[in-house]
Image (cartoon, rainbow, N blue to C red):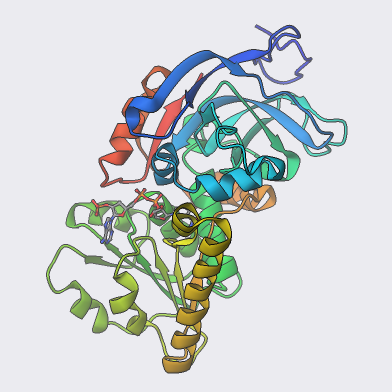
Length: 376
Ligand code: NDP
């Protein structure tokens, strides 16, 4: 029916005044897929501050972080960020709603919201310290939200925000790249066939960079189709040697971690400002296992030691990349999507009733783009 809060442009279903619950997938304890529970009695996330926007979720997507958070990853640090006063209360985050991406329609706005009105189609990446998007509604701060690209469906749009925000933070903030300076840069993406990789290839090609990608043999067609200039099959025995025969790189984006940096660091141009940015960092694992203070200090020492070692011995910068919420950055991505320069890469779609199956699919690995959940 027509929206009850007075949407001007869209038919949407805003909650009625009496409604205090919504449907959502929640976890009440950390564990394997069995902890996911469907409920129609999750707390409705109403607008509580003047800068908040309440959104009806049409589609969400799942990310490796959801699998990890389901099992408790990052719990200590995220709990601190959620509610600094409740650090000592061990159960306060439950029932927890996972899901980091969303595309949907605004149903309510705080009094100081200037960029959105009810009825606007929006997309966003939901910060891990907030209740997630595997739910009928989410409430976010205005600066975390962006107008959805008009040329794609909610399902397609939901595949982009979290990997886009992460890739932008890794490539721009840590890697020093931007639209203006990328055209003469050689970039290596280690792990190009998943969510972050498929987005990063397209962004870098839109900025004019030369892009080399490592992936499995059967993902070559996908990454070439997205614009990759050179593709190296990491399952072939001699892939490191193959990479060594290539001209050296200005930026490496490492989506894989493990021992990758040991063999890949030498592929950067020495003494010319080249940067190695990894998305696989020990920060949250450390705070989980050692506690907040010791874990953070330990991670800080690890980062500084490696960074110093690399700059002194090889003349390259070593950095960690992290997702952070940035609505205005998504506005820029929306323009690239509407210009046809970035295509959503949706590998699998699941209805809302099958969220556990979506998690299972992602947990199986070998992603080729994104797994999306249709909520409406
Ligand atoms: P996905 O699961 O979507 O993709 C991973 C891809 O890597 C798959 O296509 C997989 O396919 C491929 N792959 C696996 N092993 C290798 C290898 N050795 N070399 C090359 N490719 C490989 O993950 P995302 O793209 O969403 O995320 C990438 C990483 O970044 C994850 O570890 C994630 O946790 C991390 N991340 C960190 C963030 C942060 O804030 N620090 C934020 C977002 C993500 P196949 O196995 O078939 O080759």
